[in-house]
Length: 404
Image (tube, rainbow, N blue to C red):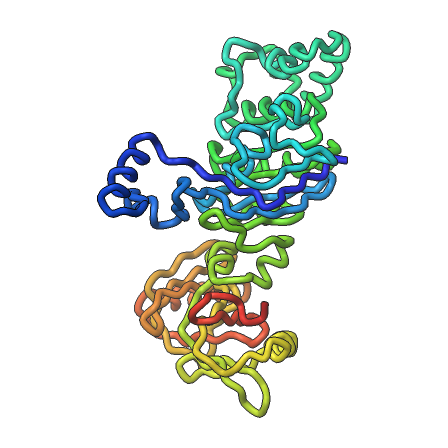
């Protein structure tokens, strides 16, 4: 079994010697310890007397052969978490299990994992064949088996024709395939990938995403994949772990986190273009919940009614979230003015100003004439509307979804 369990994992980066000396001087002067760190370190991560906490109480059970994606903005702790699984970072607190083995103090080479890095990390003086075979040679694997595994991996990744070349003669996408191939020849229990597509252009990223999906179907291993790109997360993961400032914000399938974001951060991070947010009111009319956006009142769907009622939610000021593709142009709605018109082929992305906010909506052009498309120009007044099933209602103070 290659299930991976992280129990209460925490990573603390201790202060440098200079920080400690400075803190001791302050403690002596003020009779107490006061941690002094630059303002930029105080913005996101928790600072304690031990140091800066990069990962906080991380709990996750990864099933055998599951594809898990850790996603979040830069500095959220996702790569640090992956490096702790790999053994490249020491675990400050908590337990890491691979299968039924506690591996906190097990060397990386003995964890039966393989890692694909962002910068490929290929040996420039070796051919593709030798790069793929290197780890197997270190294990003193028989030559016949090395040859079989290398050629099998090359066939899976469609790089057989490049086996005699050196990395400098390959494109970025081809180098990344070699890096992935070097990992899969080892038949690892767990495959770790740290933003492997971030150095590729948009077209190659799309191609490589498809290749990774195919690869996942052909090899029997558990994947832990790190990215800051929510599109990669949505297309690749069985489940997504969304992180911010070292904390897990939500764990769920791509559909779950898209349809039912736990808080404002998840709602704004998942989805492109990102969700629009409005200051609104949650009201009750004839015993039914509705949202009131500047006098535009929309009754919520039965599913949302049931969840809000189960949580005994009262009338209150809320943050209302509506995705761009769920807004529409209507005859009676919220008044807005078009600022920017972006024709995207089958749709138009309209940036409009309404209620003092910049709002994006997506309008399909499938049933529109050329004249109607041109009519949606900058400066034109429009009205926005939406239906109750697409509304997301968040607590004004905590940012938590009131349906959660």
